[in-house]
Length: 186
Image 1 (cartoon, one colour):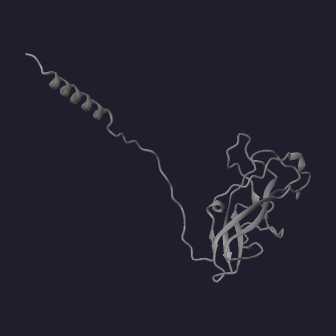
Image 2 (image 1 turned 180 degrees about the vertical axis):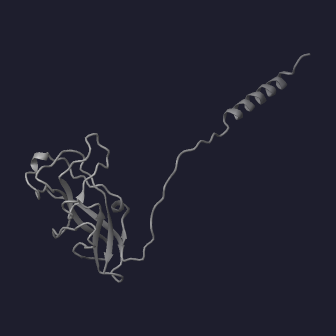
Image 3 (image 1 turned 45 degrees about the vertical axis):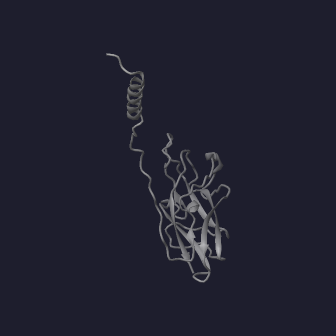
């Protein structure tokens, strides 16, 4: 029996198309998780997403730099950005910090090994935070920075951080700390 050449071509095309459609079927795989975090506030300003979870790089210092308790490194500036401020709600803003305070000097944050460095955590040193006027913001004290007068729109609270030795002898290692902050509007 002889097959018509047109029928043969249609049969071949049909088989080819069924194979192509089988190969082009969609494949779905688990891609991961996306975490969405935020907050709606009834305050004079909103804290910028850039400021709510930031890292301040204090740099490296030789342990020999610290010769006595109270020795300090240079100031490292950082900011908290406030957005969409409305001065009809509040005209001033200030900030307070909470975290693990150093056992010897509670005016500074205790050092830990957050990054998990192989050398462990440094000792004999803490992290001091101050406002733009140089007033130290003692963690967990409930004391707020010097209030900054707000303007409508975006505002910046300038701050500084630095290492401060809490002992005569400072041992090397990771010198990290975490702190949370609370805004106060007046």
